[in-house]
Length: 433
Image (cartoon, rainbow, N blue to C red; front, side, top):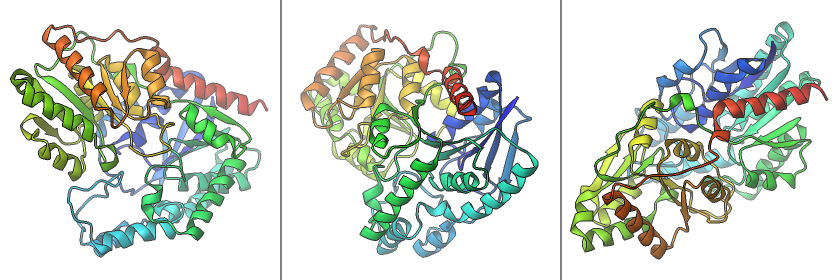
């Protein structure tokens, strides 16, 4: 069986979306003739923990670990947050951000390039070079963010020039939604872009998750550029007929940041509640996962706190169950220019749940196209009150008539097993160059 070394920061027991893509690839790779070997930190900083993924991985998979030093303890001492986990996506449970928080963000963007995991690059290259000399593999994959992982791949490529290397970009680098929030100066910005180009031009194959990302990176002329989207694992789905929520539940599952806050939705829901007593009684806004304080503040400002059900982070299997029993699933893209290429893993799990998707984001983006092609829901512009209100009233009418169901199509191509078959074909083609 051919062997592939997968270098990833996020691994079990990490929670969140960053871990899912490669846990699921690893789950199915053996079926297609590839033996995965994982390299991951021994003591990483995870925003959340989720042990449910452990059942996905064969017990005899080789997982290599070495210690990593990260500057987060320095950050905690600086900001007096020594007992707090590091939050993902620039979310905060508190309203105030002091000068120490702002200084930390500036240091991160201008000195910790490409990211705070950069101190793991050199020791990892040394460790893996020794390992590969004694335990040869047929290919290497690095996955980011964090994009420091790609520099481990770059170092190994210098030492093993004939070993095919795939750099998997789950998200953009310099075009990521929070890039400008890092307060990056002109020199640091130049360095970020130079390093990004170096990775893209050196890797044997740049792997991305959407058509929009492919179009963005084509201008940098990588040697090879391929798309393998995120997806869903049909083995995660509950079998049989699901019992739907009794309430008219509108559920968001996952991280919810300030840039995703759907002000138009809260405004419309508030209006309908004031106009329709029965709707007021039936409505449930269900937020599952870490939520920024600004979102909860907006819900309170629109008088919807009685309709809110806030649920802390759930293990992946329980989050899937919530998706399958919700009346409507809420997909919120970042309200940022240049985010048309974003295709979150959540979208595909929403498709698998076969519940109507109410989405806010670019109506001409990749996510909107997937929703249209799958007949799974509607993408609404961030400020479109009329469409939002009409759609919610239509969904509510169907709910009251017990007819709120979905006839989606062409979803099966996004199963994790099918996507792993695509990955194995890509790996095989790199060996036959």
